[in-house]
Length: 159
Image (tube, rainbow, N blue to C red):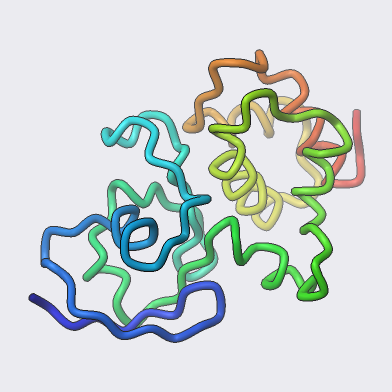
């Protein structure tokens, strides 16, 4: 077992974990952060996307021990980290709601986490920028049109 100290959604936690435990397993099984979804276990789908020190990562590709000493934000903590601790949605979450950027919802947490990172890097993306920036996250339901529309809406420039 290896002791880790990590800040998850603003709360510092200390745990003993198996050195080979994936971050997605730690978040879901140990901390109960089930909004981080296990989609493929191969890093192909992006459903498990979280932020590690503010940058999106596929948590099935990161060991929990690698997150020690760092800050992790999950979909559950996104609104609070966006300054909306009073129960309001993060602007990207709200844009996905308003623009119907989801159907079954399975990929939505990872899509939203990737979109937030994309908009942090490029606050005024074009449609092509969004499509390229989101290409590591797969959706089997929507056809992506409303996902792209949602990201552009969150950027303030639905084009």
